Length: 268
Image (cartoon, rainbow, N blue to C red; front, side, top):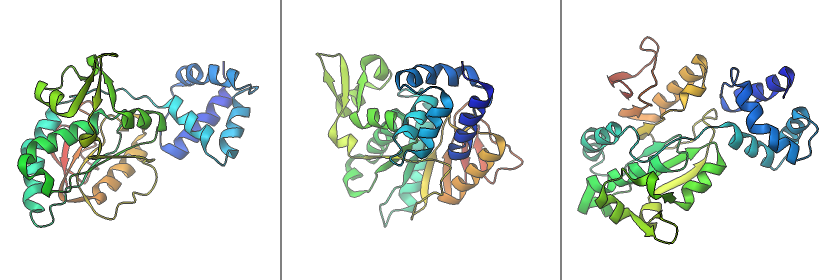
């Protein structure tokens, strides 16, 4: 079992670097790191953290982040957001960008890719025959390189996509009978740009976004970190742009600069 001192060191590191609050999760941290530390022949967590902090390649830090971040998602999760995207956000953006034909949507906690691929499917469905005239690439980021690798591969079990409408399944996925899995087709993959990104870093975008999805990630942040992140999101959106958070999450109405459209959907 890791000591309190070791736990403090790893939780402080994750808080300072990634904004993630693990202060109440000692048992989880221990469970996820114990075997890896044993296999790697480190004497204890301090020795492992020394390597994390001095490894110029960043390999051990990536491993640490992959172990300590939870990535639970699935296709069609909180589907009301996608309905709202299609019926409200996209018509607004289409009108606003009728000259430039440039749509900018960011999925900021992309995990294994279900959310950004869903967004890309909704966009393709919405634009129909005009689709090819628009730049509709979805930016998808996550701090975990492990889940991004899975997202880039684009292979999902049959049960993971069981709720996807049949016509989308046929149009956007290729069935792999030998493994009973589905592969995201290349034309959809090309519409999503996957990148590793830490939400605590300054946002590097040159152009403002029309919509930002940051769902089920702020539960890992304390109130101060959350408020700072929400302000950065606000500054990154186009005037009138939309911000989506998880349906079980909340923003403090008193401190948020956003207009509340409905629980979990906000507008600049």
